[in-house]
Image (cartoon, rainbow over all chains, first blue to last red; front, top):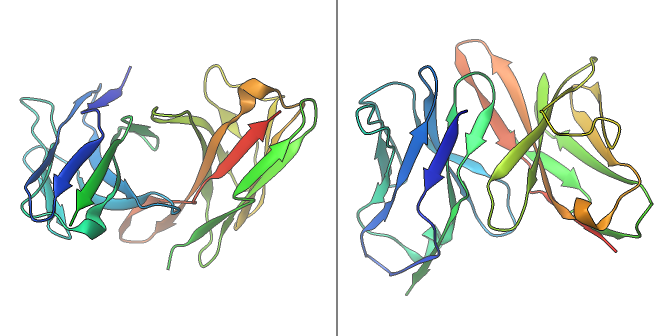
Amino acid sequence: GDSVTQMEGPVTLSEEAFLTINCTYTATGYPSLFWYVQYPGEGLQLLLKATKADDKGSNKGFEATYRKETTSFHLEKGSVQVSDSAVYFCALSVSEKLVFGKGTKLTVNP
Amino acid sequence: GAVVSQHPSWVICKSGTSVKIECRSLDFQATTMFWYRQFPKQSLMLMATSNEGSKATYEQGVEKDKFLINHASLTLSTLTVTSAHPEDSSFYICSARVYTSGIRNEQFFGPGTRLTVL
């Protein structure tokens, strides 16, 4: 079945450090790929998405490229801020349903 | 816009009792709502999909008689955990989706409800 594997956390970085959170997927068909972010006490919010191979999703300085050859959708940000501290979920969708990874908790220290 | 609320945010109940969780779309009408369950350090697992005015579609392994879902209006869906047991303790999250002409559908998530069954 469809599945998403993302790097386990927690990840702790200093402000302005470079961030990479790895995500790989297994899917039948051609999935759309997503990154969601969950700030403390809030619901999941869509951070970015890509719907086909080689698409790059970007938002708030984060970006991820849909790599079909490596079945990956790694999340990157060049310079993290304290306000980026949250849990990040990678997800895929083939039909209407979302399949999530386990989430990676990011803590950014000043 | 596109805010989804859940009530309550947390609930503690005794084993054998039933608990109702509400999911509301506050500023849009949701044709479809989804219910997820999240265990500690685990991913969100889809429990069921509910469409307004029709019966919910449950994922394999989810007991429909235990997790009753009602989607009576375009802004409200409820999940009732019947005869709750300690193993039902979990974080329950709903999402709502709307189809808008020209815009690919997107799910908007509620903040979740922490259920603890003693």
